[in-house]
Length: 425
Image 1 (tube, one colour):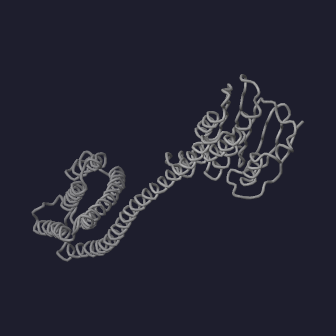
Image 2 (cartoon, rainbow, N blue to C red):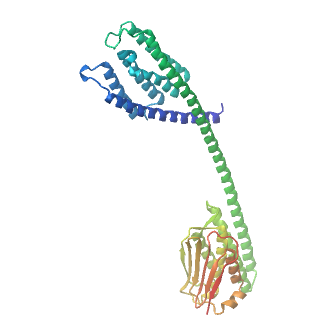
Image 3 (cartoon, one colour):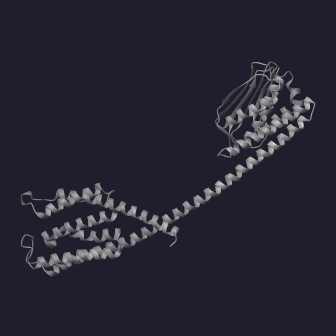
């Protein structure tokens, strides 16, 4: 047998043993309670205290002890102790009351318990020993060796003993046969179920390993995309060094920042354990630093106020928002701020039910003719197009400041924008 099959068989046997142990514990509990009730309601004569009463009292105490210590006693030992107690109570009562003993039904419990826990050979041997004990008591009773105190009368014959034995034997055999086949069926069912669980567990491990490999591949893809975008950005920066025209340099710088905002998304995705979501607050902090460092050539003092109330966004939202913020921050620094101090950009992102709300604002000079600026500026056209992509409702306020409010569905796909409002001077 291979190690895998051996492991499966051992695991299945442990499950079967736990189930059998649970059944034996329940048997002890119920049997002890019934034994205690019978013991209490029985009409014992304390003045004529007999050995049978003492044996049953000791047996009851031992049953309580076995149940109390059931978790510490192995299943085989526990079952053997119960069988011994049953045998002693059965024999003592049989000796005391002959065929009139009410405890002779305990003979049925011996094969029942044996077949539940032990193998068939052990069950047959122990049951034969119990039958031999029954025959021995019958012989001693018929020969008069047990005395007159056992309620024997001259009318009790071998036929009476045999009839009693036959009745108990038939009941024991029928019950034991049923328990044997039932036990086999349940055991096979548990073995099959445990083997299925082990197979499923092994399959889960294989799926986890395969998922891990795919995650590594996705991580590598994001890493390579980020590197390729960084190369493109580097080429644009090199190109800008060869230009003397400041306007052209500014255009290339804006294009570089747009590419870097996308590259930053892929950088955070390959560094994250969740390749579907971007840690948005960290992303916004990093992005604003990159844009401000590359655009703020006049060394203006710019303060950023953040109010980010969401943990993450999907890449479908992260990339458009990154480019939108890139355009807005660039315009604020380049055109909105005329002072070198007290320049503030505020970014607020929150979630309300199924909508994500974004507010971008600065304390700059605003835009005098926003409609003309919107038509002439590639940046505003890009912002408008990206908000259409994320299905956003938006509004502008450009009077003595710049403010953009927009909301979009948290699970939105690509679709037309709903509406927009412009407030300007």
